[in-house]
Image 1 (cartoon, rainbow, N blue to C red):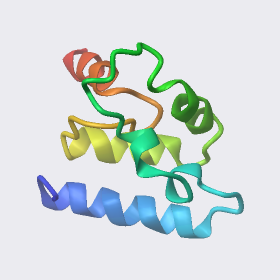
Image 2: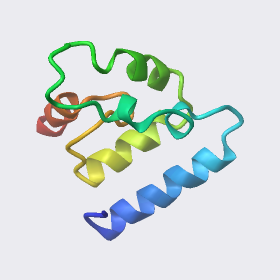
Image 3: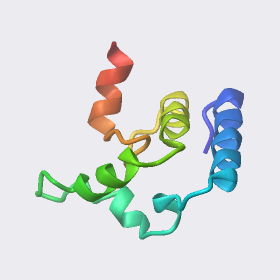
Length: 91
């Protein structure tokens, strides 16, 4: 599950922030399929709703940090799709 010790530390930091959040964290309280849509889905808008929810999330930046450190290749993390995270890594 974790690519490195740093990834594990980022995961723990993210979960601690989620536990301390004063607002509801949408990805923890909804259907996981919304955050990890089927790659075969022909609709280009498969991430529309989760992206909207991520935009308001207080732990979005920590979530993205974890995804980048752990080299997550699937799902929406920190408001970015796999393709967006790949582009960010190239920069």
